[in-house]
Length: 124
View (spheres, rainbow, N blue to C red):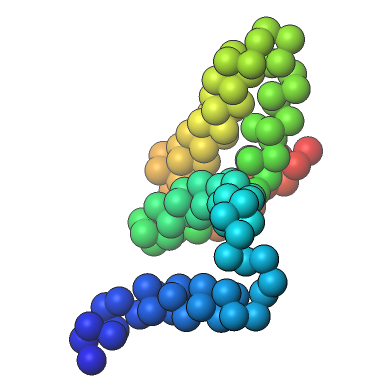
């Protein structure tokens, strides 16, 4: 029983893969698996950051908007080259995250409120 409880996520993943292999045509194609992994990569990165926020008893509503802002900043930095554009996008995301962290840590604003404010600011 404890093994089932500790590894239930893996059993659920195995059941989901087995179901899709049986029902979905073309799911066993390696190119389909590669495509799924490439499409899920941005969501996995955002989920990792959100996991860190939730693990510290907070919440971050602005992750999608910050990702969109960082993605849009690539177009601004692209005339300088691909490398500087990627570094600039990561820097924009880091600066917005730092602002959110400073609002929570130094000003003692609730993470829900500060991330909601940055969500609106990043979308603007």
